[in-house]
Image 1 (spheres, helix red, strand yellow):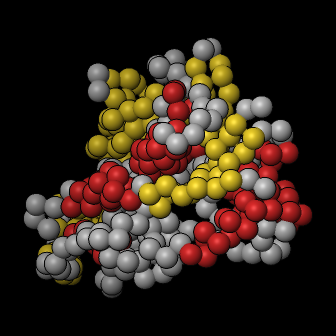
Image 2 (cartoon, helix red, strand yellow):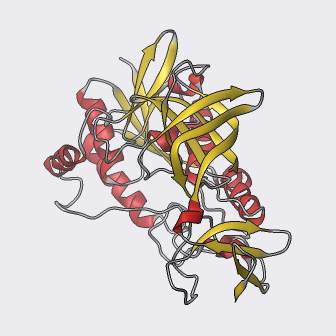
Image 3 (tube, one colour):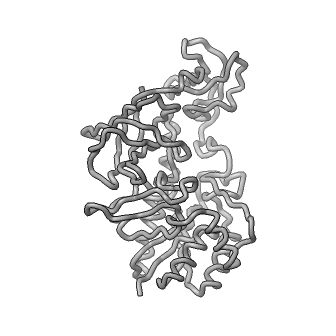
Length: 354
């Protein structure tokens, strides 16, 4: 009998993932990672509904209830030191550099599917690691391919796009073939959660600038032509593409189109100024293929966005994107994920946009 270690959060998806795997005949064991560091220099989130939170009492109680109902073992592994060093420090450094990071992507590849799995193997052996993510894995042409989930609205392949071939070879995504509505029905049938129970969990339940830890510093908000329109309290309070919170009266909506960390300047413009046609992408992870042999690919530049058609050219240190139609708010620091149909071809970090 194959043994599967299931990452459990106490939510519907991970609970049903464990149940489905047990139904399929696997020996199942649960594991939960703790990412809050007791002596952390980072502040507690205002809202408790976040991954990064010191009080996981209710989550752990729910996990124990689910594991008890399934008659499976459960353990907790402290990942807080590495989470702070790799995820939070990267988050802070990127914002200070006037870039917008993807903390969930780095958490997945380095912590959840990395350190957590390695640490668990020190205590017990298992064949696979599974989670409640909505994605699929298939082997094609000798490579492990990451595929979009059947439920496109819940697909999380964007957040998993930096997983390595070795990681993918030992991962199961039991929810990938299901739709969310079906998972909710299965959850209710097991009695894990109340019917209609709401669920959502952000990376950080508060103002992201709280994690930056910088004192406010006055700077200018300028229009694309150089006109000073207003003052701000620090460029790190803003991201490319931002519209809300600018507090500027203007004849049409304004968006952040550039940020200069050296001069502490935020540049704004109209919606036309947010569109760009090309981007340089570096720090690449190749998934389903090592090259780009198709004329046009679909590229996601943020998790919730639809794919945008683009030509993709491999370079010495990454790849270059040329969009068939201008893309809105191409943001340095964010991930650009290249798809061929349902398959993730490659994922990299946007360095520059033109």
